[in-house]
Image 1 (cartoon, one colour):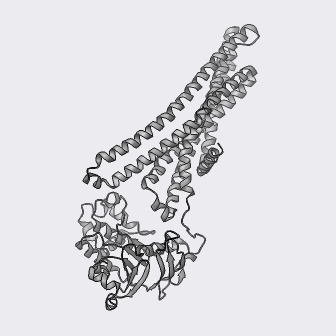
Image 2 (cartoon, rainbow, N blue to C red):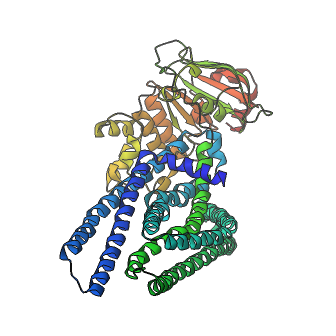
Image 3 (cartoon, rainbow, N blue to C red):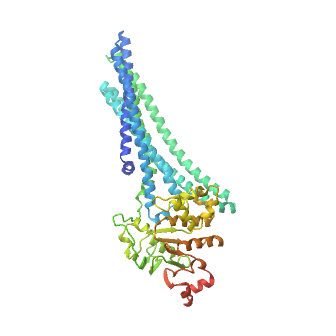
Length: 577
């Protein structure tokens, strides 16, 4: 139970003051709702008493009617406050989650399944959003505030009826707690199966071509059906138990009404008790019964929310990359050595070193190529330079300054990156290119970048030109077209360093030539670091760094390396670069 309250306290704090506003609004609305029930009951009581006595007092009836009508604006005000607070808390949660995901360590993101992330941002987030928006109000504030007000009023009217209401309430709570653990277990199981099903769908969509080629449709659908059936079974078990609790609560509520009427009738016959009071107490008893009966339902609801809250908090507790926001921003001068790796050693795992004493310098506005077998450490060097990982030993310097002494954001501002398969957002070509700059980007700047990237002519040939939507992951375009748009996006950036990780490895010869043309167009504007397996892409580099199992074995120009008759020459002869 301690863990439950700890989890709910933490997830509630994320909603911040907006959630507090939702709670206060719910309290006002609940008190107004109690006021409606009380004044209506009081009006009924007085009407019966006057009818029994043969009298008519218009003033008191008008006073109570006025109080009754006064509750409506209070109810609207409270509900509005609850609505606005809940929506703002929901907005804060979603922003907090996506911001945290984007700050997580690269290793954490790579180890996570896309389906897991989507489940967190959709299903789990929706459960918490409902908790902020309506769940906490309807499950806790409304029944508790209204129920306590009704219980206190009942004790003031007649202690005996208050005691009856409390006894019935305690019994209903005891019954509900008998189901709590089983319901929580079923909800956790249901959420786990739902997560597995989401991951499976994500895999199917990502690999749909392979599924069709191997005629594996029936296999993957059968697997998905089994996961859905397991999810449905666990969820049905939880809902059946919840329904049993609700049936018990309804039974205790009906029993309470019967007891109030029966005991009221008995007291009216045997004592001076006025039966008209029962008409006041019945609506109050309904609120009291709802409060106690709802404890079990509310507890089950909390267990359901906790399942999603635990998953979200687990994600939020994951260690983020070190942003170094407390350190100064990096600005580059015109030093002789723009990039320096000084005896850098690194491994993704403590017992497995990838880079071993890597040592090199790169001058401004030069083109440097990295060559080596797959797994030799080329991409790892780029990942370290981009700040996704931190060297185990040695230093990485930009303009003679250790990058660890500067904020991560300012270091990344000096670098633009084109991947082997550059992702595009599902928006227009114009917006995809514009993403490369944090400042104001004019259409002329976008077109100039596209010209240099050798993609402008293709873009203007499209019916909608730069306003053409590229589809999910740029699926409406070819690989070469996506790469050149990614290069244009990099050129919009004012970063002096351009990293290109295998930009032509998956392209045909025509696309490769266009990429090489784009590189030639910008070679005098930026310092270019490129990893490639094709000789045509790297032979004109100012410096070629040859890696073998994480060690630099050769370094020089294309011609000088050929004279050494070493690893590079063998790569050239086999065209395996």
